[in-house]
Image 1 (cartoon, one colour):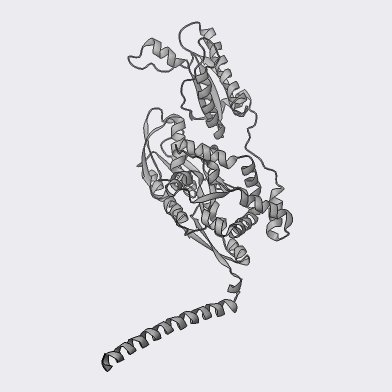
Image 2 (cartoon, rainbow, N blue to C red):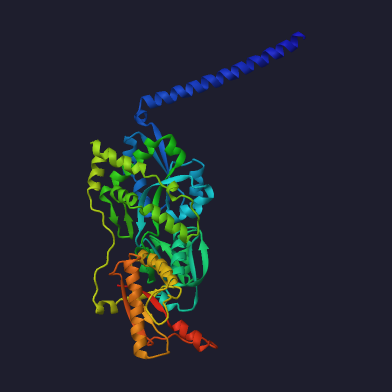
Length: 473
């Protein structure tokens, strides 16, 4: 090897060593600078970061308030809220990728969209429930009874609680429709205001805007229990790696929400630790998961795999032994009385003044021939009807009808007995609130229209029915 070659090799080695040294000293210098910055400022008190996926729903706003940022900073954590504008697919994908520690969502969206990502998180808290914050609105119609046999058009945000609300109500009331899915509530609202659709399913603040503009609120989420339930989901890996971080966030959130709980003027019922303790104890969350998964036709092997009650229970236990402001506030909440929706007693005349919402679509209730005794099939259908009625905050009038054959007075009494038999079954067996329902029989006074070419025998079979009319005050 000649001297020139040796010189070139030596030069190359010097360059490599120099470059490595520069990189080393640069990295060392940056680490020193970071340590110096942290050591000479309040940054030394920050030990980590909590990332939360959210959107503009009012029920989530408190979690990303300035106060929550300050409370968590005092506990050593920076809070980063990532607003995706309601893109549930993107949100649950981020949860699956480990890009966020926590995510707000709804039970229905997590069941339907989260399934794609193998449910990457567990529900650690019920944040709120929509009690009018979501609604079905229309300019053309005032109630579902005005639709009759028409096919209507509706707009809603795709894969959102709005779509879920419409699918449930449309099924319960037997509404035929053509849908116009959108990517935002503004688009759905514009389709209705431009007259391109008959109905639009919106959430706040668009609900109040539509009502102010003269649109009719047909059904609001305040009329349906346990349907649109907002939840806080913790990433499974974050929970496994740093349970304390998740617990600190939720305990600070519960404490901060102490004076905000209850139903807001925009139709959102905010829940705290007391409510959640009851939700876990009473299996409300599991029952909601099962109910909503059945509506969505999603098969769940084990609904308990989607919840974690340990975080809330740990916070409750700590509140009994710790005296910090956080846990003292939580203690106060735990002393509150838990209450549920109830119905007041109405007189016969008050029942007559209730406004009709629409008829529940049901299979014909079967009785033993010539009697008011329910068949096994009739009871099975009433079990399903009972679940639906209990979910709604509407009164229900149960109306018995008879065929045109036979003695009119006997038929009238049979229609009353059958309606009463249905009422008794719903109250005693299906646990429907007795003040929510009222039965009457009308015999042949309100017959259905006979279908062209329908045989008299088939027509009379159709007339022998029990009708379920939803009413509101």
